[in-house]
Length: 114
Image (cartoon, rainbow, N blue to C red; front, side, top):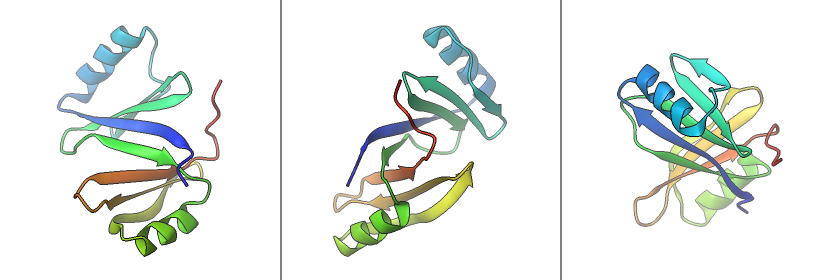
Protein backbone atom coordinates (compact mmCIF):
# COMPACT_ATOMS: atom_id res chain seq x y z
CA UNK A 1 0.00 0.00 0.00
CA UNK A 2 2.75 2.50 0.88
CA UNK A 3 4.67 3.64 -2.19
CA UNK A 4 7.59 4.99 -0.17
CA UNK A 5 8.49 7.92 2.01
CA UNK A 6 7.44 11.26 0.55
CA UNK A 7 7.44 14.08 3.12
CA UNK A 8 8.79 14.97 6.55
CA UNK A 9 7.57 18.16 8.22
CA UNK A 10 9.30 19.75 11.20
CA UNK A 11 7.84 22.44 13.47
CA UNK A 12 9.97 25.59 13.81
CA UNK A 13 9.54 28.02 16.71
CA UNK A 14 10.92 30.76 14.43
CA UNK A 15 9.99 29.93 10.83
CA UNK A 16 12.33 32.53 9.28
CA UNK A 17 15.29 31.31 11.34
CA UNK A 18 14.40 27.69 10.55
CA UNK A 19 14.26 28.48 6.85
CA UNK A 20 17.63 30.27 7.00
CA UNK A 21 19.21 27.36 8.88
CA UNK A 22 17.98 24.74 6.41
CA UNK A 23 19.02 26.90 3.45
CA UNK A 24 22.53 27.06 4.92
CA UNK A 25 22.55 23.34 5.72
CA UNK A 26 21.21 22.24 2.33
CA UNK A 27 23.00 24.85 0.24
CA UNK A 28 19.92 25.98 -1.68
CA UNK A 29 16.76 28.03 -1.06
CA UNK A 30 13.27 26.84 -0.28
CA UNK A 31 11.09 26.40 -3.36
CA UNK A 32 7.96 27.31 -1.38
CA UNK A 33 7.96 30.07 1.23
CA UNK A 34 4.75 31.21 2.92
CA UNK A 35 3.95 32.16 6.54
CA UNK A 36 2.19 28.80 7.04
CA UNK A 37 4.75 26.52 5.35
CA UNK A 38 8.29 26.47 3.95
CA UNK A 39 9.16 23.64 1.56
CA UNK A 40 12.46 22.27 0.28
CA UNK A 41 12.91 19.67 -2.45
CA UNK A 42 15.68 17.38 -1.19
CA UNK A 43 16.54 14.82 -3.82
CA UNK A 44 12.92 14.63 -4.89
CA UNK A 45 11.57 14.36 -1.33
CA UNK A 46 9.82 17.08 0.65
CA UNK A 47 11.37 18.62 3.77
CA UNK A 48 8.82 21.03 5.18
CA UNK A 49 8.76 23.51 8.03
CA UNK A 50 5.62 24.70 9.80
CA UNK A 51 5.20 27.37 12.46
CA UNK A 52 5.66 26.06 15.99
CA UNK A 53 2.79 24.25 17.60
CA UNK A 54 3.03 20.83 16.06
CA UNK A 55 5.09 17.71 16.05
CA UNK A 56 7.22 16.11 13.39
CA UNK A 57 4.98 14.63 10.70
CA UNK A 58 5.96 11.86 8.30
CA UNK A 59 3.92 11.08 5.20
CA UNK A 60 4.01 7.89 3.15
CA UNK A 61 2.92 8.04 -0.47
CA UNK A 62 -0.23 6.27 -1.63
CA UNK A 63 -1.74 6.01 -5.10
CA UNK A 64 -5.30 6.84 -4.04
CA UNK A 65 -5.84 8.43 -0.65
CA UNK A 66 -9.56 7.64 -0.39
CA UNK A 67 -8.98 3.94 -1.05
CA UNK A 68 -5.95 3.80 1.26
CA UNK A 69 -7.86 5.62 4.01
CA UNK A 70 -10.78 3.20 3.85
CA UNK A 71 -8.46 0.19 3.80
CA UNK A 72 -6.44 1.42 6.78
CA UNK A 73 -9.53 2.08 8.86
CA UNK A 74 -10.84 -1.39 7.98
CA UNK A 75 -7.55 -2.82 9.24
CA UNK A 76 -7.81 -1.10 12.61
CA UNK A 77 -6.21 2.31 12.11
CA UNK A 78 -7.79 5.07 14.19
CA UNK A 79 -8.75 8.21 12.24
CA UNK A 80 -6.91 11.36 13.31
CA UNK A 81 -7.25 13.80 10.38
CA UNK A 82 -9.46 12.74 7.48
CA UNK A 83 -8.24 13.20 3.91
CA UNK A 84 -8.14 16.83 2.81
CA UNK A 85 -6.72 18.64 -0.18
CA UNK A 86 -3.89 21.01 0.75
CA UNK A 87 -3.51 22.59 -2.69
CA UNK A 88 -2.35 21.62 -6.14
CA UNK A 89 -4.24 18.33 -6.10
CA UNK A 90 -2.22 17.08 -3.12
CA UNK A 91 -4.17 15.18 -0.46
CA UNK A 92 -3.04 14.31 3.08
CA UNK A 93 -4.50 12.41 6.02
CA UNK A 94 -3.25 11.04 9.34
CA UNK A 95 -4.22 8.10 11.49
CA UNK A 96 -3.03 6.43 14.67
CA UNK A 97 -1.51 2.97 14.62
CA UNK A 98 -2.28 0.50 17.48
CA UNK A 99 0.62 1.97 19.49
CA UNK A 100 -0.61 5.57 19.29
CA UNK A 101 1.89 6.67 16.63
CA UNK A 102 0.69 9.23 14.11
CA UNK A 103 1.14 7.99 10.55
CA UNK A 104 0.57 10.27 7.58
CA UNK A 105 -0.39 9.36 4.04
CA UNK A 106 -0.13 11.60 1.00
CA UNK A 107 -1.42 11.43 -2.55
CA UNK A 108 0.80 13.76 -4.54
CA UNK A 109 0.35 13.67 -8.33
CA UNK A 110 3.44 15.90 -8.71
CA UNK A 111 5.87 13.57 -6.91
CA UNK A 112 8.61 12.33 -9.22
CA UNK A 113 12.04 11.10 -8.18
CA UNK A 114 14.91 12.50 -10.23
